[in-house]
Length: 123
Image (tube, rainbow, N blue to C red; front, side, top):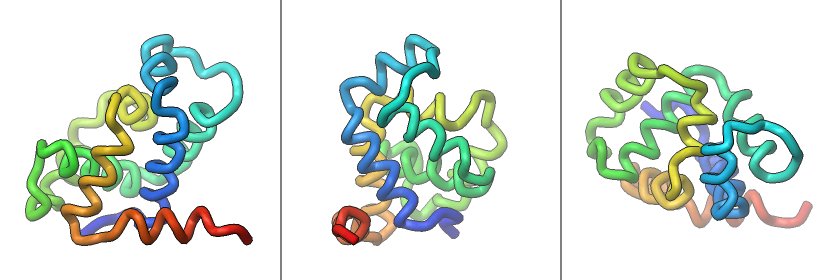
């Protein structure tokens, strides 16, 4: 069972898309200085609990075809067992993070567009 809300996944997708070209430069520099989308995205992922982080990684793996959608539980367990670095560093080092997360939630039967649209509506 997915242990993170679709809204949180959509938030990561939106922020990763906004900072797509800078994500890799941030990850490779190892710097956490400055403000903006990279810092916000990093802090958002870091603030997720362990179950949410593992689910986020698992969704990315499903979208990347490392795991099949039917193997979500195994992907989550693997993400928890194999965590060796901060989740935000691992995910932000993935050049196609937004695309993989979007493909992953689609493979799990959720509509990323509907959730993203709801998040971007003016208040």
